[in-house]
Image (cartoon, rainbow, N blue to C red):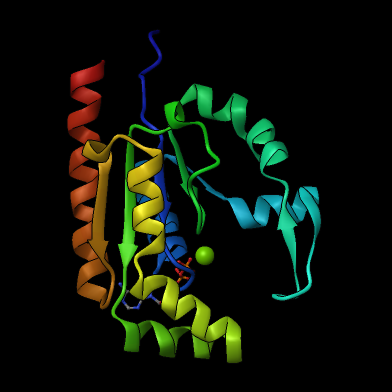
Length: 174
Ligand code: ADP
Ligand code: MG
């Protein structure tokens, strides 16, 4: 039996924009494998030092890449992380940057317990579209797409669009 080729999908964007919500549901609907890079790092202690300013461990990007390399080579992965410039460009066939309006994001992050500088820096990250620009720098601009992620209707539409893209990709590449 011939094994079907499947693409790898990157879901990125500022914390709170809805990457994990979308990624898990997408995995359910498509059978692709969801990977949360933050969780992976915690489980494997893939950290390299501690950020005093933000009071959080610093990701060991090289070890994260090593850890994921074999799985990514096989395709069919959905990767969720609030950064994207340290992954090998060749890993991904498509990159989605989720976007949320400021007031909306502010209340989501507040609800998550973010306060003070951490809260403001993350909202500012979204206002300055930092992650979108990072993605446009790191990948072929043609494969980078922004997805609005403000309300449940956005989630549903994003899911439908990605499923459709995936079906077309499978036809074109198998
Ligand atoms: P991220 O993984 O990007 O940090 P999450 O998926 O954890 O974001 O979502 C952050 C919060 O926003 C959660 O409370 C989630 O339920 C909510 N959320 C995510 N996507 C949407 C959406 N499209 N509409 C409304 N709320 C959403
Ligand atoms: Mg998340």
